[in-house]
Image 1 (cartoon, rainbow, N blue to C red):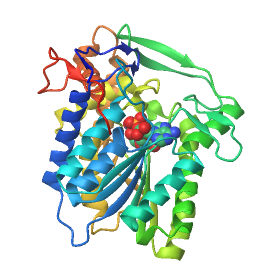
Image 2 (image 1 turned 90 degrees about the vertical axis):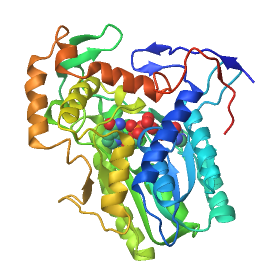
Image 3 (image 1 turned 180 degrees about the vertical axis):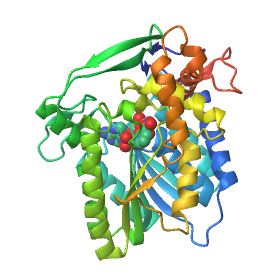
Amino acid sequence: MSMEILTPKIRGFICTNSHSEGCAVNVKKQYAYAESQGAKLDNPLKALIIGASTGYGLSSRIALAGGYGADTLGIFYERQPDGAKTGTAGFYNSAAFNKIAKEKGLWAKSINGDAFSNEIKSQAIEMIKAEMGKIDYVIYSLASPRRIHPTTGVIHSSVLKPVGEPYSSKSIELNSEKVIDVTIQPATEEEVSNTVTVMGGDDWKLWLECLLEAGVLNDGVRTLAYSYIGPEVTWPIYRYGTIGKAKEDLEDVAQYLENKLMQNLGGHAWVSVNKAVVTQASAAIPVVPLYLSILIKVMKEKNIHEGCIEQIVRLFKTQLINNKPQLDESRRIRMDDWEMREEIQKAIADTWIQINTDNLRDLSAYDEYKKEFRNLFGFEVEGVDYSQPVEINVSL
Ligand code: NAD
């Protein structure tokens, strides 16, 4: 036991501690939402979620288990608690998820380790063979700053930069809460190539090839990876930037995997383009926190605001479970449909021109963004008494 009263330790877009009880309450809320929206299936699903501890991956795990009674194996890379040092939010989220799933009578296990490695892939396959049988859904939701290549051992680091030309835009300086102008220099060719190696489709392809070869995928298996396109203001840094190049690669791999899975098992591979949401990964992208602050305000005013769980529940409910998804001209599922509505994007573009430090809180939901960011680490969660000490040494 190691009980402490905790307050958030935030530096810019990073929070270095997390609150186990706040994380557990978040997971419970997401689970309850998924349960309220799901349906009982005749043959309960079995799912492997890679990147299952936070953001879209965690919500995918919860949507499948809470909504459709799926057995889930979750893979993630999180720091466990160590003495007085808290674990990461993803560690506490996963501990909370495992507990709820077991209470509900679902099989749920997790592997905490580097999903890019051969070792973790083998461990997952062994566990699936021994305890799960065959997998119906493989969700690939990794967001990582680096990848150790499994065959060469080379460490590749991803960068969030424009390609070709410098990019200047407004952004929030999160420590001072000022709207500032930033200029980001373009990536070198090597940085582009490294970002594609980390965040492109190579590892997704390796996972599916290993799973297929091991014979642990069910007939009609479906695999999904997540992408983002977003509005024009972010294109130089996102769509046309280093991360956009990685996402193009992901889409190419989706086509490759579609052919391979269709041939072998009548299966499918899709990229789902999701909306912008507050996650640890999106907080690190320059310009995006300001865009998100405005997006939250505009979408709330129109009553169509969604966080990760609402997006993913809608994805499974309307596109996947007992359904074949509707695809765009590039074979992508478009869950960013509400975000990209013309009226939403026009309202954001109008605000973008006017916004500055003085009117930040009038023209955007910056305080809501900040709260959602703190919520990611279990802080400022409704229903939690932060004046009380909380257990740090939680186990998975
Ligand atoms: P996130 O930071 O919340 O989650 C990342 C997950 O990856 C965590 O579970 C983490 O433990 C895991 N991970 C990272 N490195 C790992 C490793 N080496 N081995 C095992 N696990 C590892 O990120 P997110 O924002 O939910 O992003 C997930 C996907 O969704 C990404 O492909 C991202 O581009 C996409 N996406 C995000 C947004 C957004 O606004 N956040 C929008 C659309 C699409």
